[in-house]
Length: 401
Figure 1 (cartoon, one colour):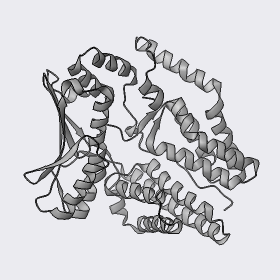
Figure 2 (cartoon, one colour):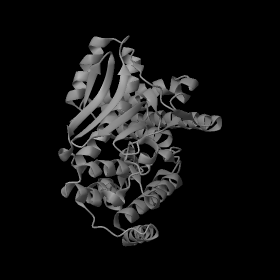
Figure 3 (cartoon, one colour):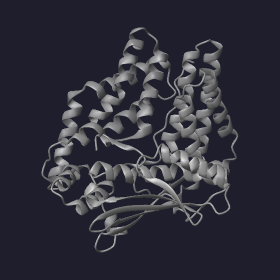
Figure 4 (cartoon, helix red, strand yellow):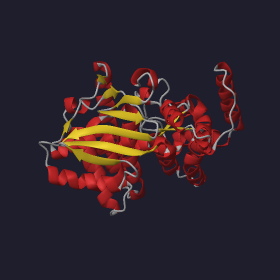
């Protein structure tokens, strides 16, 4: 393998986080002073500014907010907080295996909310006294419901014959974009198999996992597929990161990529569309969290560069970057550095690509100029918005929210 894998910037910038991070500290203060109803309302505004103007009643006590294929319904009374999200109709579904899986989901990954059954309809539900609506808790409950509804709806429909209670409003990509995405994903898969075969023939088996993982992450980052394809990519990636035999995990990932390679084009394209979301799939990453997330890739690639293992270093950095992008949205200034570096090292000789990507990664990790530039941009934004500077709270320090 003499040439690096190709890379293209994402087409799904519309999924960037809308989190209103400047109001988080004031939300915590509202809760601490006992203004619980306003705490909940501000948590909703924190997740997506302007949502109340579109989807709340005049009193802001009842919200009906679309997220993918569900409507998130939030009620705030004088004493109670309640959130309900109708999920799927199972009247004609394979009920026993479906409800068995629902029981498993209610144990994990759900923590506080539950999937409940009423009149052949499954719905997510949570309710608690208003004075227990601590901000972290409310944010996590809303996120938990939205993300898991997206994760399981298509699987339950295809696997058990469930049906949607309502169809989501989707916006397909233009035909030329669909065609470009199809061709690019096919390119990614061909490159992966070619690199895999070369490395396997040279008995460089430790790199095989990286090739498959990077390819899955590139596909997800590049086109952000929806529907069942998104769920299958996530499952395959989880298998790769599982504890089964190494070669069994590789085989499972290869089989998925073969399936994707031979998939009917129209079937593939049916998973490409824009959809309205309330809670972003990804977290919003600060410079601090970005540096923490890429530190291992930087430390490992430093050793590999020094040992002249340029392929190992390149794969380490590509995986580290793409894995971080899998769960996080970046500030524009950081995204620009990363995407330009990944583009410049796309389909290039391995040694040169590794050295350039390492140089840019080191800049991200160590540069004081970058931190000062970020601080200057934040200060300018606060000044333009006429917002007072607030103390950076625990939640923002840890997660970059």
